[in-house]
Length: 158
Image 1 (cartoon, one colour):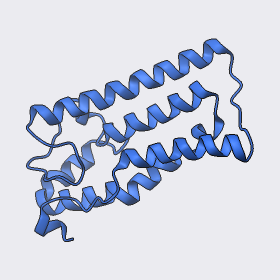
Image 2: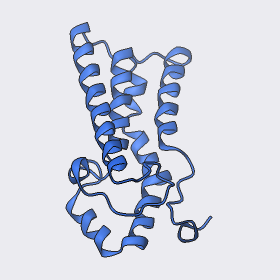
Image 3: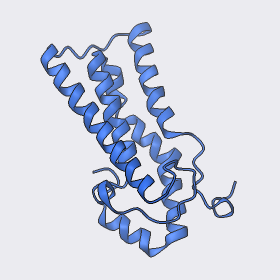
């Protein structure tokens, strides 16, 4: 499908599924291949996992709220009527993906599963190739210099 004809980014795989797949792969690898325990004391485990989890939910909540306030659909394959550059989007261009990465980290630490944590940096690379590059190409075609100026002023992740 052509992005321009559909006025949407050519994202075919819902990004949350990639984070979920990494968690499932981590659990299965830990259970059936070789365990990779983290081995933190309970206090550290609870502190790290709850802090990362809360930060992840907060980032995603702020992003979705900003989308809703502007009347937009947060799905990456939906039409984008305007660039959102307010709220959390002044700090990161991808707060939902960053929030999901923090949740993956929180789950890995909370379960004491090193495989899930090891896969945290892998998933954003996959997200780049399956979603972000399509989103950015679409937004550059649709909004031109307004989007490229935004890209120059706000980092992709943090």
